[in-house]
Image (cartoon, rainbow, N blue to C red):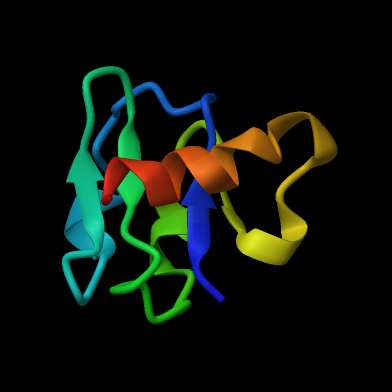
Length: 75
């Protein structure tokens, strides 16, 4: 399971430096987590000022589309 960055992301970038495997990449409007590289450590979620990062199974219903958006960003 990977972590997912939702549309609540404001690109504050606190998460980028916390990822031990460099799975977080910048998109045009937000950051994305590569689901193939994420080791599910949760370090990024603990420093996100918007609380925009969730474990895939814990993504709120209104943000479930972010799961596919994160994966699509890395296709």
